[in-house]
Structures are given as structure tokens and as C-alpha cells.
Amino acid sequence: MKIGFIGLGNMGAPMAETLAKAGHHVTGYDMATVTVNGVSTARTAAEACDGAEVVIMMLPNGDILRAVAAQVIPAMQSGAVLLDCSTVDVDSARAVADDAVAAGLLALDAPVSGGIGGAADGTLTFMVGGTEKAYKIALPLFEIMGRKSVLCGPSGNGQAAKICNNMILGATMIATCEAFALADKLGLDRQSMFDVVSTSSGNSWSMSTYCPAPGIGPNSPSDNDYTPGFAADLMLKDLRLSQQAAAACDADTPMGLAAMELYRDFVETEGGTGRDFSAMLPRFEARGRS
Ligand code: NAD
Image (cartoon, rainbow, N blue to C red; front, side, top):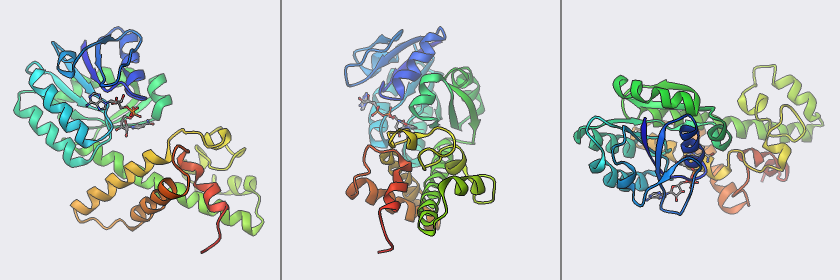
């Protein structure tokens, strides 16, 4: 397939490289000077779309997505698929999809989970919004870049699934970390805490797969001095998106709000920026109730 790829950052570069390695013709563009193995470099976003059957975007936020889409949509050939893998607000995802469809294109929003490691080894999960027709065209690409893709409904529903998932993740990570800090103060050792909770009703992915306590459970960023992994800054971004969406549709999400506020304080005033999101454990460990 002939593929355009806009946004060759931490995620986009390895995704584009994986597609090129699988034999696709990938032309990339990034506003920074980036070279990616096997990927030809275009001078503009529009040039990267020339003759492309699918144009993938992997960009930082909704405003940048809207600006790039405005350049890319007129440059795409009719019937091609505009595939946005960035994590952005639901409104931007739906607005870009509407513009693409109005211009005779197919559109998918397909944010990912799996992080930089998943992008490098082709094991991402894609949460997809859009039509069955567009999904079928993009499916072979999802299968190369990822291990799983789920079509969640019309445009914007991929972003909706992503922010709901990450709202649960943020809240369960905080609950797991504060419970470890409480267990410490009660004199319960961390290995016993892990052995009980990971096989009991308090278990979650945050405990059993990504345990925030160093030296306990499977290898995770806590074993590497909380080097991300999944940075607290990115968790804060996703929690803000979920609160923005909740406000827009009048959904009551008190746990998501509390998680957003805790990660906001952690990132903005407590030295959490650049640390893994599981570094909430040393944060709670160092504090008392007030
Ligand atoms: P990044 O900042 O490393 O990459 C974004 C790239 O977009 C940069 O290279 C930047 O130069 C480029 N860019 C910005 N504006 C542009 C423009 N106008 N035209 C062309 N290029 C432009 O970010 P990332 O970590 O690769 O994340 C990309 C997206 O994936 C984000 O939406 C993020 O929330 C999401 N995401 C990231 C992770 C992760 O672990 N890094 C995990 C899941 C989802």
C-alpha cells in the first residue's frame, strides 16, 4: 500500500518504520527534521499524501490535528482513508472526520494503547471509530502495527473508548498506590500485599501487570526507578480529555476528576513530570494525611 505518515515522534517513527519493514511504501512528514529507516521524507504534509491510499497521523493534540488535517485533506485522493492514531478530544476527532467525509474521503480515529514499546514491536491495541468500509481497508495495517484492533462504532468512538479506558487506569493506579502506602504504614510487607491483592477482588492491571512497587510482581517501570513507561504527563493529558468529554456530555465522573487533580498536582507541582505514572507510589509513601 502507498501510505503517507504525518508526525514521526516517539510513537509515529517506530509505527512508520514497522509498516515500511512489512513492505509498504511509506512517505513521512514531520515539522521537525526526522529520518526513519525505510521511510521516504516529504517536504510538506501535503506532499506526503500524494497518491496515498491511507494517510496516518500521529500528532500531539486536537488543535494540531485540526491544523494538519486542513492541509492534508485537500491533498488526498478521493476514496483514500484518513487514519488518525493520535489521542485527542472527541470533538476534534469528529470534526476532522466530518471534513474528510465531506471531501470524499473515508475517516477513522484509532488511538492506541501500548506505548513506545508497543509501537516498536508492533503490539499496539487500536480503538477505532468510523465505518466498517474504512476499517476493512485499514485492518491489514492495524495487524502489522498492533496485536488487536476493535471497531467501537462511528467516528469519535475510538477516542471515547481510549479516554474511558485511561480514566479507569488512572483511578486504579492511584487506588493501588495509596493502598500500598497504607499497607506499609500498617506493617504489611509489599510481597504479601501483592500476593493477596493480585489474586483477590482488589486486583487490576495496575497491580498484576504494572505493579507500582519496585521488586514486586512482573518487571515494570517501578523496577527502573520509574522511568516511563507511560509518563505521568501523558496520563494527565488523557485524564484532562476525559474530564473535558464528561463536561461536554454532562456525565458525573467524580473518581476521574479526583484522578485528574492528583496527577495534575503530581506533574505540575510535585516533581512528577517525566516520571512514570506509577511513581504515585513514592508520592503517597512520602506523605501523611494532611
Ligand atoms: P511526540 O511529541 O513524540 O510526537 C509528535 C510529533 O508530531 C513530533 O515529532 C512533532 O514534531 C510532530 N508535529 C507536531 N506538530 C506537527 C505539525 N504541525 N506537522 C507535522 N508534524 C508535527 O508524541 P508521541 O509520544 O509520539 O505521541 C503521539 C500521540 O500518541 C499523542 O497524541 C499521544 O497522546 C499518543 N500516545 C502516546 C503514547 C506514548 O507512550 N508516547 C501512548 C499512547 C498514545
